Amino acid sequence: MKPRNRNLATEQSKQSVSEKTRPEDSTDETARQIPPVVQEPYVCSNCGYCTDVKDPCWPDPSIPVWDPKGKKREECWMLCPEDGAPEVSVLTSPDRRAQRWRYGFEFPGGTIHACTPFVVLSRKPDGSCSLGAVMEAAEVIREIKLKQYLESHSPDKEIDLQHLRDAELISNNPHCYRVKDLWLLSLRRSRSYDDWARKAMKLVYEAGRPDTDLLVDKLAAALDPRLDIFRPAWSRILHIPVDLSQPIGTQLERINPALTEIRDYLYRFTTQPPPRDRIEFIWRDVYIFLLAQLAGKSIAQIAEEIFPDAHRKTRYDKVDLIVRKVQKAADRAGVTIPPPSSETKHPT
Image (cartoon, rainbow, N blue to C red; front, side, top):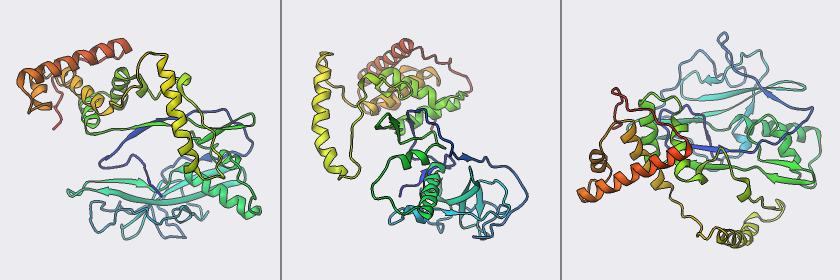
């Protein structure tokens, strides 16, 4: 089971953003997550973890990196005792070797608390590490709903997607939603940031812009509208029926050629071939543009940094073309860039 990053990492090795559809659901049996508050020191009567202990020394190599292999979901969370604990997010072991991420939920029948390990996801040789909770709130809710159902009902004879939807009403991260008699998979689009993207974000951050990720994403979307995950073009999104009681891999193998044929046919109406994936070059071009706009670097300086092995004239012309191309796309999309600051530090 793959752990989820809680954005508390000392160093992010991968970031992504995603867009989900938000259907309108209504039910009388919803749950609400309780926000944490600061209270008196507390020791859990079940595991002994407490609130008044410092965080573990995460760079310590003797603290293992989380290995998800062989881990079942039911092994990655547990219910907490309702012993008057404060609403806190993190509990630490007395020996400062481990932590647990604690959630509180208000159900119609009362309050339920549950926790999941808070672990080292990855560690670099220099000691920097990425941290995260193994399970997110929405995942824990699904496990609680499952446990409650099986404790009060006999096992279902057939699978029913309504169980999943009922468990996800607390979350803004639905997997599916119902339209009349049909279940539709929620739209989930994401992209990973490579080294170029992270350099661009660092540059924007050091320029004092609070909307670091947003500015970089807007510039990327200006270069390729398909990357605009905030405003999906519904005219090109196709929902695919899959029978979850049948082998999924076999169905996807049959669907893939049909999707390719449909896509190729529709692109013929544009008289253009299906566009290639240029995401790596897009992040690079965004970074080059921001070096010119925010760091105040000259075309020659940028060319020497990005293309050190290329001929001087060739690399100069290439960077100049990239800067003008991104500027034109930004103007067309209405993306404004602040002037370079004298205090901006060039990222190393």
